[in-house]
Length: 174
Image (cartoon, rainbow, N blue to C red; front, top):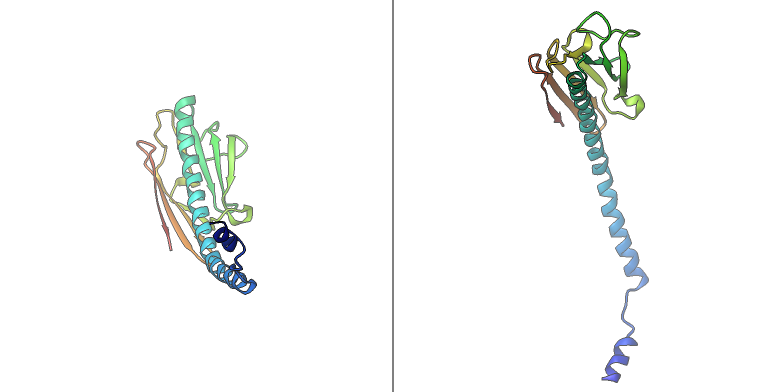
């Protein structure tokens, strides 16, 4: 038994340097094939995340209006690619009045700030929606977000129902 153990321990079996190098080359090739797919997946996740942030801002405006019993709204600025959550203090019910309304927060969703949204389009009057203390919206409509990168094309439709203030969305990515 001792002789067998010595024979096993002193065996010269193992991996040669060539076998190790071949294994590393194979691992490198497989890893390099996965990197482009990872980039596409990251772009898709960024677009979905940016749209969830916009939806979150809309829902936060609605819940703030109900809880604080004051009008809150969200303004969409396509030029600057920003989404502004504001408390309504001005006279016009369905629009954002810079300098009059109190800004709660501003999110930048465009490419310049690490975001991925290329365009924000809306059918909302004055590119804003204002939620009233009962949870309804002063106006309803649709918000569109679009992205186009080297690898993906994304399109999202966010709907706001005026009677209930309900926000729903659909996202398409190619």
